[in-house]
Length: 181
Image 1: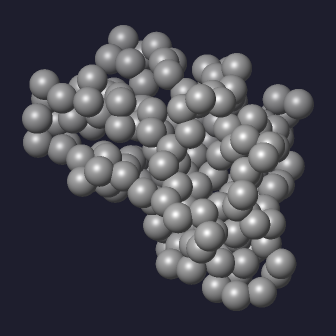
Image 2 (image 1 turned 60 degrees about the horizontal axis):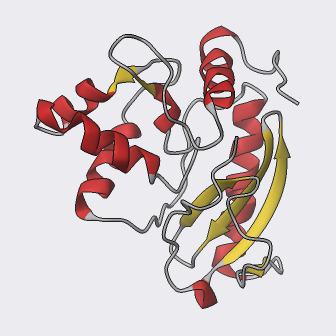
C-alpha cells in the first residue's frame, strides 16, 4: 500500500527537477534541488499533476539525480552499502536530527524506535521518532526501513511492510537475489 496523502514537504517546486527509475521494489521518483537530493518517493506519492519539472539532463540538479539513480542501482545490485550524495531534505530541526541518526545505522542492521530516541537524547521520544521517520522524504538512502518495533515487529513504512521486509532481507541475506515485482 502506498502513501498518497502524506507527501513530505518539498519546498519551492520551481527549483526542483525529477526523474523516475524502476527497481526490484517498484518505481521510484527522485527529486533534486541545486543543493542536493530532496526526495526519493514511492510510486503514487507524487501526484500525477505535479508541477516539478522532469530533468532535462543539464545542471547540478540533473547531475545529482543521475548520481542518485546510479547509486540506487548499485545498492539493488548488491554493490553498494552506503550512499555518498549531497542531501537537501525539508523538515524541522527534530526531523533533521532523526534523519541524520538514521544514516548512522549500518547496512544490514536494525534498531528500535526507542533506541533511535535514546541516541537522540530522550528515550521517551520514540513516538516522535516514529513520526519523524514517517516524514523521511529520502527513502532507502536515509534508511528508515532499518528501524523496527522494540519487539522486532516490522512497523510503519511508506511503501508497505512487505517492501520494508524486502529491503531488510536484501541487506541481510545477499543482494540481487530477491525480487518483489
